[in-house]
Image (cartoon, rainbow, N blue to C red):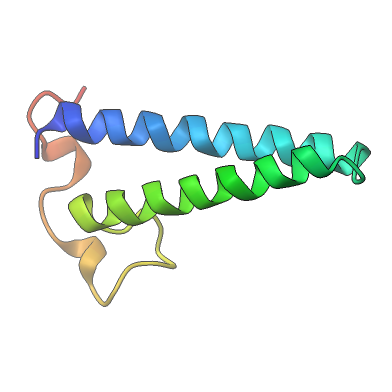
Length: 84
């Protein structure tokens, strides 16, 4: 997969994570809003699916999801062409 596809996947993840965080903050002050709770659950499922898709294509996002010495495999992020 190309670098632009990877960047696109990271942007989708970032947007989904931002949405989850904003809903989390809203629910801190409006815990009885059942529509917001349902939306949070839907967005969390979407985020989880995006993480799984990303990790299937590009590897672990965090050390918690890495297996063995996966972090030591080349290329490093700065070794990828077009990465500035």
